[in-house]
Image 1 (spheres, rainbow, N blue to C red):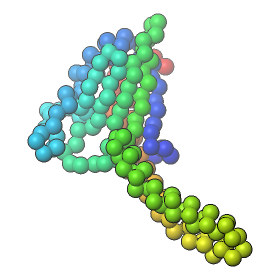
Image 2 (image 1 turned 90 degrees about the horizontal axis):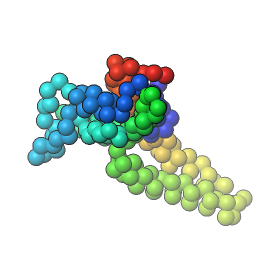
Image 3 (image 1 turned 90 degrees about the vertical axis):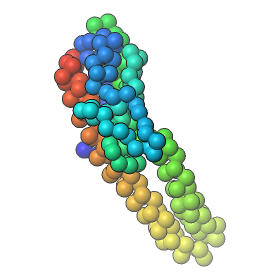
Image 4 (image 1 turned 135 degrees about the horizontal axis):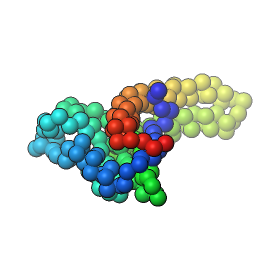
Length: 172
């Protein structure tokens, strides 16, 4: 199911210590590497790369092309008495969120100018309100395109991380 927001939260409880989880996860995750031109080199049979510690992790899927909708998976390992709670956040890269805000700002300003401009001299400027539908529909269309790309990738990431914790042993 595609999320309606540009992030996804998952909470998992595992019957292992945070050190054991970090060790098992670091065995499955490749070290982050980059080549000269930003292309990710082939890393054996590992599907994700990133950094893992006993406090948490930050990983992303290894692909050999560009994909702006590729989510980053942040995890926080919280030790409890007999288990470890893993708080997982799957979200877009912060640069993509910032660029999206910059791209959408003129549309939002255009909607506000057309809508509030029609309210200044209300009966005479009512013809401006239908014009606000154009930038509003562009904004909604952009959001759904980003959401569709991110949602598909977030579901792939969630399936992978949940399959990892199923193998490790989820307690609840």
